[in-house]
Length: 141
Image (tube, rainbow, N blue to C red; front, side, top):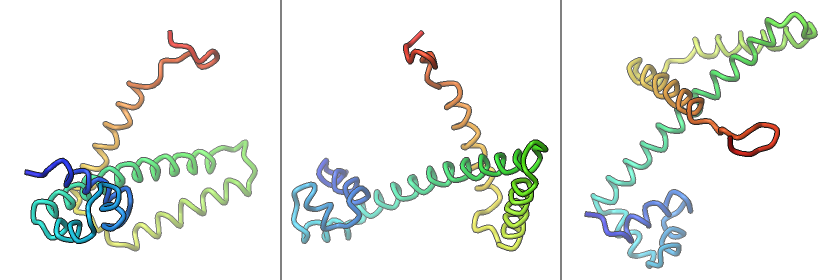
């Protein structure tokens, strides 16, 4: 079982970026921090937190990419836009498609589907749990 200090060290490791800075933040020596880094339980927790952070980041980046694609597509299709804007948006979309098709996905299809599902759930929860303040006054209803 992780002690509270080890748990704080693991969190500090991610927020401070190095074992020595994390050690200072939680008040232990660098020698203790190095020993903890070799501890199997601590290493497991670090790996789990890293995987969780990367998963959340992947969902966020997927959402950003989908939003950017929608904006570009809207610009490319909007006849009210200048021709140069429409051509530039179309060029970016085409280059992105070519780049995407030219690369092998590092994630298995099941993981990609899971990321899309998680993004859709996140997006839906953001819409459902949005701020209920009046846009003009900023007050709650």
